[in-house]
Length: 253
Length: 196
Image (cartoon, rainbow over all chains, first blue to last red; front, side, top):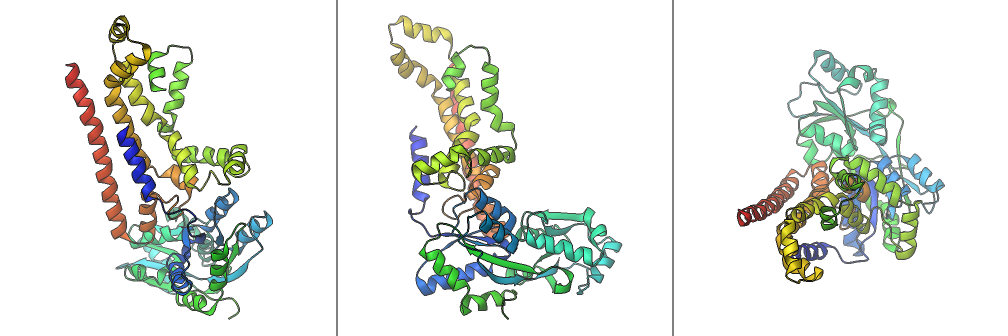
């Protein structure tokens, strides 16, 4: 019994104080960009937000089931419109970025990189790509964009049997950087991260190969002052500058 | 409940035992799905809890606590049940013969004999709660400081390509789990010696 009490006490002492910072539910292509924005926000205002990352589709489901998020940053605006329709968002929010995708191969891969994925097609024929990683197109916007690009370049049929699907785009990137997949299509914002760049090569896939990844965010019912301030901060020049540096296109530019 | 299951004989006991053991064999996704359906927004349980406490049962620490109790049922109950079953009937009858009240017999005779089973249950439950992943991910999401458990934090840091952090946390969890299991086997061996 003493053991249980001690374990419980240890567990409780690990908990943060109540009334903690609001939670931002963000698409995982923001894995590296958003913490930087949040840090700048904290430095400037002294306020803090917490970030929960996932695929936009999964986060949208969690919101529908009552997850206590304050702000939803989706990689696909359709999910934001859906929760707005269901009355869980304050409004239909704003567009905050246009996402781009990139073909990424690990260090030492024989695949040559070009915008129309011809090198990838050759590597598929040669059999040097056994596993190809993308995010799950069922619920991850970046997975869907990857599938569109592969269909448009007539590679989908050849690649389908070799696909490994990440739960979100960040997991797909991890499959490749760990060398377990020989190539993949991930978010350009992730390909630019030092931890990823150091482990391979990438090339931006032209916008003509897929429908634009219109990334929209909206405040959710019950959002507090800090969440509102962060929402405004995200639309300001400082945050836009950071997003741009992480490879996003910005609305109105 | 473990004591009751050890002593009671009734039709349908098999079914109750099966229900208790169910979380052992069910995929976490099945458990997670039913928990979300049962506790989520729109379910009467979720609504009731929300009205009473102004909090949510899914994607919150409260929800994880309830989920943990459910998926730990077999780990908590089975060792205790086995421990009580191992107490010979004549020991209990002897206690009754000596004029001990049921309460006194429970405290002075049964509890000390079943103690190793209870310690096992506590240690297993503790380790299993720390390590559970699937259900926690589904019911809890991954909210920093609220529902991001160490198992989820490992998954997250691996996705953030932070292998150092993932490695450190994995090692910690490995040591804790090993410690809990060593405690379990250590106590059960002592019982064996005492009996032999």
